[in-house]
Image 1 (spheres, rainbow, N blue to C red):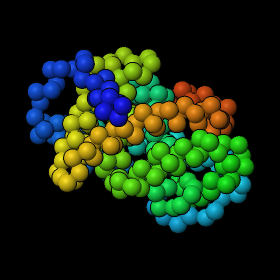
Image 2 (image 1 turned 90 degrees about the vertical axis):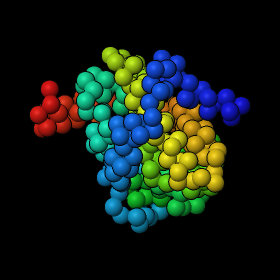
Image 3 (image 1 turned 180 degrees about the horizontal axis):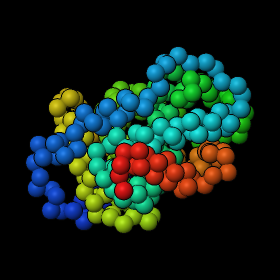
Image 4 (image 1 turned 60 degrees about the horizontal axis):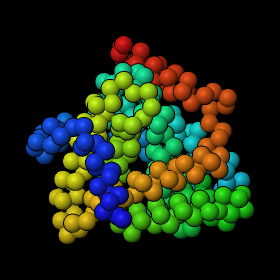
Length: 259
């Protein structure tokens, strides 16, 4: 089952881009450099590593953290190679398709440092008991056991985190894309980049790349559950997320002279 899940993740990007498979690892790395992916991740991470226990309102605290992180999420995406070269509608479509998963995986990786809870970007630590009191204990426990615990066990590093987030971002199945083929090609380059990185950085862990990819279906499932449980209901006041993303991206492009 696990092998099938890994193959499915990669096959989605391969089916329509078989011609890209002849590229060498050098070509992939030069076009989608790990350094830029890592730097993008580091640039938007909270500077303060300290945290405090949050009040009991778990859902409100998570929503506030999501609100705060949506702005930095756009900043992160703009730093990912080739993202700002896409047309504005595709940028919005990609972020709209992936924002909840991108926020969750960040929360989870940050939470590796704590026990029995989530460490939010705002510095608040939400204990699982608070989540259970708020009625979201089931999905909260899934986050802890299927994502945080797995990341902690394999000691997922920030380069791997950045690559997984980039794979999530470049979703060729996002609704409303004008150039899905281009997105597929970009995602496949990240796959190749990450696989090569795992081989070189962790030569004694031949299954590491597969273990990383196995987090993606789990993350997708949990992301849907989080939406169902209204984890991210209160986002930017009454502003629809589409409009919010367009405003941020459009403003940024004007500031940088892009049409």
